[in-house]
Image 1 (cartoon, rainbow, N blue to C red):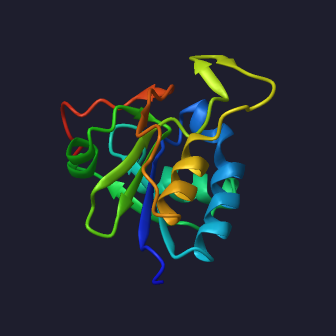
Image 2 (spheres, rainbow, N blue to C red; image 1 turned 90 degrees about the vertical axis):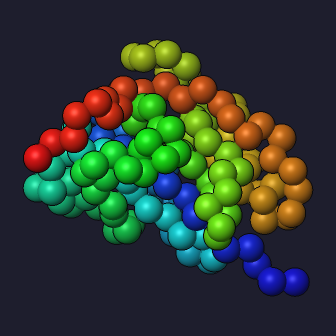
Image 3 (spheres, helix red, strand yellow; image 1 turned 60 degrees about the vertical axis):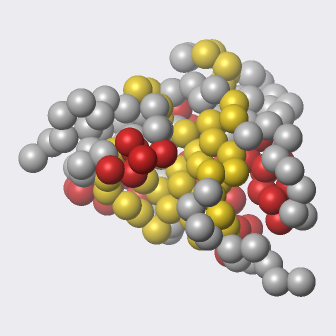
Length: 153
């Protein structure tokens, strides 16, 4: 049976502390995703991240993942991304299978659990790869708001 071609978009902001906290997980996820035919892209909406800030962020956190600067908020608006970090799992035809929180580490701004007990993205990926229905296609993400009102020049 042919492997599904999946895509994962992580919406991040260089200045968002929660985005920064998830960088180790994102790097680990990216490494395992390559073996599963999953394309991973880090999306930086224009309101928080210049090219230099993104370059510095990637270098500081040693991320080697593909990057997309969403200068005109096209992808943010298309997917209705509202915060960073927020994750989207899509099919090769851009059908959204899951979106929202990566896991249940953060439950409110500035409030996180000591132990992660629910792995929303990992569970959705496993279900998709096993050609099962996604049991939780959306979980409200917690993070820094994406302000899509005015694109930066």
